[in-house]
Amino acid sequence: MRVLKSSDHKIEIYTDGGCDPNPGPGGWAAIILDGKVKKILKGYAAESTNNRMELTAALEALKQIDASKPIKIYTDSQYLQKGVEQWLANWKERNWKRKGGVLANIDLWKEISEEITHRKITWRWIKGHAGTPYNEQADRIAQQVRATKGK
Image 1 (cartoon, rainbow, N blue to C red):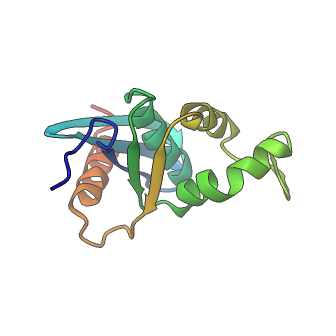
Image 2: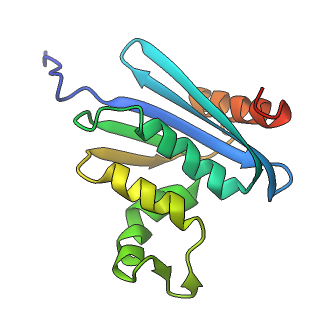
């Protein structure tokens, strides 16, 4: 039997965000699982987009975690997952521009870039509304925050 070392311990984060309509009022949520500890983060924006809310959920969760701890982030946003794993390096190389010009959500992408530097993060895309319990919970919380205007 293998002994779990503190360096092996991964914190798991489930994120979700959205607007209705898009663009429009938005909500986001992140569920952080650290062993037996579960922390829920949530927030509201009066005017936003689905993508901004998805990025905000991940960013706010990352800000809560010690940079030395390994993290596994689950997201149903391909924009977030592909952005971090496939596109971010090129955007930075092009001085924060896309091939086609202006990069949307540049402020959040820059913050995410800073937060993920020198961290060990595994990014996992999961299908939304497919029964993954913590993803479903994050979705419900984000919808509730949006519906109650952050109250």
